[in-house]
Length: 492
Image (cartoon, rainbow, N blue to C red; front, side, top):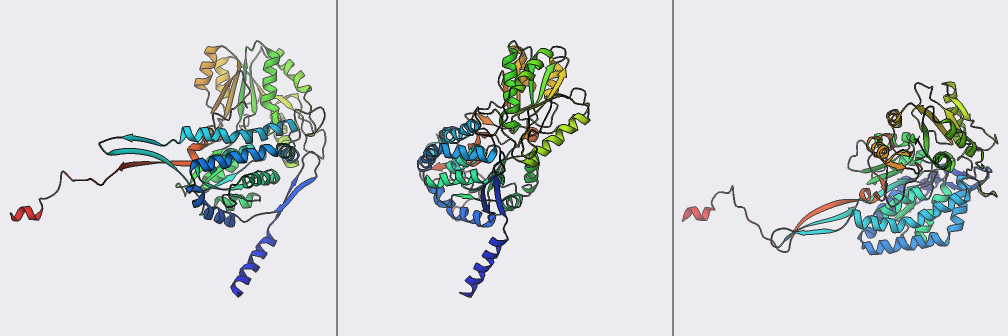
């Protein structure tokens, strides 16, 4: 009894020392959610205990449970979208598309699992066969970002649960409420409490979670810096799966486009959706020098029409604020650095409300900067780069350590074929925005954009591992070579 009282006292002490995480509405500054930081070790232990029973369930059982999850989200669609809009600052219409993506992820994942991890059996010799099946890893951690606090972590969680894994999910400390609602929907649908665990916390809790021995892998969507840190941390544990979905310094090439207003619309969609807080957002706009003036003028006029306002404004805005004041400050610092290096503003990055993290869409000509920073500016800033010919356009598109998304608008079929063949990126589009990646296809990048673990349709690949089996219905074996004669034979 005394030992139990001592354990309870220690637990209460740890709880009292834990930080309280607050989530604020970027548009108003209002605190909309608060909760204590969690215990990574306890959450992993709970998931570890629940994993075997979940993994033993047939695939059909797990599939139907996740379909119930989709239905639960569907019944709470308005509530969920409202929460996402309030917590991220993104327009309500955009938050609704995110919830729709959460719902659609289930059927897409079920189809992907059937295609990517099928059961295969092949007869070989008489009475023998070769079998291919897949097993879950065990307990997987999922670290989610703030820009799509439901859709992006859900893109890891659903395939992981479908494969039979248990999951410990730590949402971004900037969007914990959306993460909590997502987990609540899983539980309401019948996913056992231990199979999907919620860990609230900041960087310290994320590091503690990644360091747990009870983990079999970690699935991460976030910054390059965070991905590099995790890569170093997992260097000594190659037996654990690590899937990294990171950022991009993505090129958008406009080349002899016949419909300039349409090309400008694609540029605006590529650069400024979600206030530029998308890993696939176009950061570099590459155009032919001397033929760019008319296009840039049309683009500038369209930028001037963009409504920047709170998520529920009427009319609905194209952009809301960025996630918080620190993020807005950082984007402004990067903008100022470009100007100090010789960049020429075409549309300035302004701060219409100093006390709130609103930023206006910006366009800056950085052609004259000799050593342009190869960084992801995670906000509404697009850099114009003028080049002399298509060879230079491709060279400029590849002038980055990243390799997530790239798009060509205009050009001939032959030029697009060359663009596709020579540009280094995991998502390459033609006459479409850089951020036009379907969930029914693999999604991922190369270079600093990932570690060759594409997500979306290919998430099944890193949520289960293949097991090859040679099987026979009865025991039958002999050794034909390399044995001495039996002793009984020698005596005869």
